[in-house]
Amino acid sequence: MMAGQRPTTSAAPADTGRHAYLQNKVTRRRAIGPGLRTFLIFAVLVGLGALIFPSSYFYRVGTLVWINTLAVTGIVVLLGYVGLVSLGHAGFFAIGAYATAILPNYGVPSPLAMLSGVLLAGLLALVVGRPILKLSGYYLAIATLGLGMLIWMVLSKEAWLTGGPDGMTVSGMNARNLFKMVGLNLKSAEAWYWVAGFTAAIGAAIAVNLAGSPSGRSLRAIHDSDVAARSLGIDVARAKSRAFVISALYAAVAGGLLALANGYITPETGGFMHSVEMVTMAVLGGATSVFGALVGALILTALPQVLTVFADYEHMLLGGIMVVTMIAMRRGLVPFIADLWTRRKS
Amino acid sequence: MSLDIDGIGIAFGGIKAVDDVSFTAHPGEVTSIIGPNGAGKTTLFNLVSGVYRASSGRVRIEGQDVTGLAAHDLARRGMARTFQNLQVFPQMTALDNVMTGCHMQERSNLLSDLLGLPGARRETERSRASAMAALERAGLADLAHRPASEMSYGQLKRLEIARALVTGCTILLLDEPAAGCNAVETREVDDLIHAIADEGKTVVLIEHDMRMVMRISSHIVVLDQGRKIAEGGPQEIRTNPHVIAAYLGAHGAAEAEAAAHA
Image (cartoon, chains in turn yellow, orange):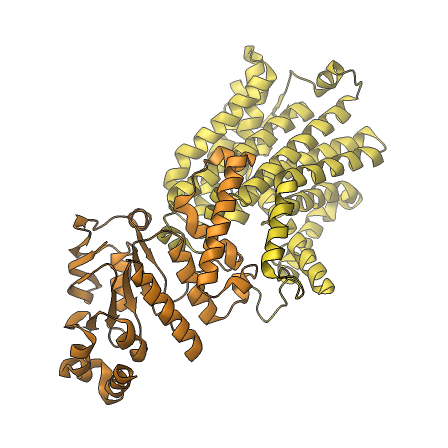
């Protein structure tokens, strides 16, 4: 909704007919789908990280970046595509994390434990989503906030199961073993880095596929005009519920990965601040694209590590960055830079 | 399919915005709703298309009672509409806007959409083709890849028509399609609406441009203060003293007369 007469970025060059241009675009799309392209870009970035990281510490931070990217990709689907704000997604994240932590103690293998957590989060989103998605704007934000707090409280109070506020150690699978099977001997931190990066790449590809698909167009339509979407036969309640479930699944997978990679979790993974952090990452990077998710996750995960020297001022600095972002580039970094780029070219 | 409005009404806080309005719109014809600002024309559209819930009366499509159905269910029964105050998807390109209108024809499921399976891509290609055809028809093919936020008011009006057309509707409600259009564009919209009706669709039109209304309507319903004050063919309406008093006025009657002889 930019004002003014910005030159169009996608208009056909004058010398080629518009149909030739369209044809060209279509065939190019077929050669390599946008989902696959996104996957490959992410894969290259994962590889680049591995090339330059000098120590296990960097791999651990890198792992966190990819896990956060995955969770924030879910926020992109919900906030960027459909325009719904959730301040409770840390709850779904924590369900994935705690299921992965708890179930192995009862003899369930880690992958199955994680899968159960993911399904549980999805089911909860489906059940809770229907009534609360009737709300919109900040009413929805408050309702999801309540949901997140409920989950956080259960995790903090039920110490017999969750270890309470102190958290619990996660036993079970180590990603090293996955790589050993194919003869690669990686350090544990490296192995988790690759697994997290690979999962984030798949998650991004799925989100990109969705955006360009019939279902994705419905979601984006709801973002722009609820009334028009309905008039085109789109079942808005159902579409919103689907997006909510999908984004909850993203959060839960990310949570499960964090539990396994860290080997330790606390109820704070499900806390309010974590929910806010996820939304902040999406908004900072640009909530409409998976690359926004990556950039937001990268900045807000890496920066606190860099700023440990100024630990006392960390929150001030982050807050300052947020305020500046919102004033100078409301749509987030990635769309802002993309705009600059196209404007310079034309 | 014919659209039957039977004694429909709604009140907002004691004020009857639409009160006991009845008419029938037939396939292959353009039925126009005219009346002064605030007469309840758009409210009537919102009642018929399921945006508001009627407090009295019935809506029937081909004899079938569809009163109180949700907007998306009405769409599935073949009703499509455009909006007076534009409801386009500004963040999408013109093409994507119209492709969204193909929603009901698209047969891929969520899983294949998420995984980008060939089925989902095929549906998208098909929607792209029929959306391009509709844009062509609305005279917007050149602007297919332009973000809707950068298009002019008149272009957006036509974009909404294109988007409504690809739904495969049999009943089309057009709310001031020629608003913001210059004379040439109005003529184009005029021709387009004609062509749509000639395909056998039921067209219901709200419009203030009396030349256009008189030119293309088979049947005209006149509203004033929520009530129907007259109904009939263009000739009858033009000369109806109630209509001239409430809406057309001397100038409007002259305009309408000019259109009749044009």
